[in-house]
Length: 200
Ligand SMILES: CC(C)(COP(=O)(O)OP(=O)(O)OC[C@H]1O[C@@H](n2cnc3c(N)ncnc32)[C@H](O)[C@@H]1OP(=O)(O)O)[C@@H](O)C(=O)NCCC(=O)NCCS
Image (cartoon, rainbow, N blue to C red; front, side, top):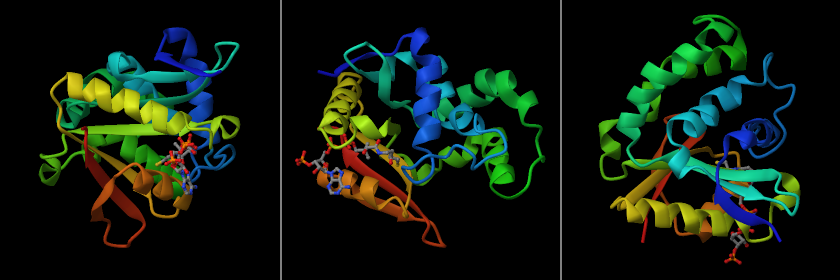
């Protein structure tokens, strides 16, 4: 039976792999970017390093990490920490202004983490990312990870949480709908959704 436990530094590479293999609207993003590490260097690494106390891992019977839920209780503070403590550790790998197409967009996101936060989210201060390898999906682990994460937020006195997702990821949207998330915002071109819910 897979188990949920806190992140350990030994999980780092396995969780980078989970991010890449689920980073194309839930499918495998290997080959999508010139350097596939750009995805976990934005969406996984900073949480493991800056917020390890809110990083929960789904481990298989051999204790191999096959999924995660990660995030921050205070997104505004996380953005500041990202810029000050995380960005300098990876910036040289992806020079600002380099790349074309999708690579350029991600590199821009990495160098300007302020996109994660705007004042309209003040009532939903926490955020999260959840990803499971294909073999771990559809068995209730996502619901269980979410329960663990929401309980950890409640224990910190955080009342609401948000997440960002691509509208094209219809499987994830069905999952979040089922778990009681509602739409907060939609990007002007309709491709990005921000969802939220209470932590109760
Ligand atoms: C999306 C994801 C986190 C869901 O986790 P999961 O373990 O597969 O989902 P669960 O088995 O815990 O499902 C929980 C509930 O959601 C429902 N659900 C999950 N996926 C669904 C789908 N595609 N369509 C309809 N309902 C779905 C389940 O039926 C279940 O309902 P129930 O508990 O009331 O019976 C997981 O599939 C995943 O990591 N996908 C790839 C990465 C990804 O897209 N991450 C999100 C990026 S925004």
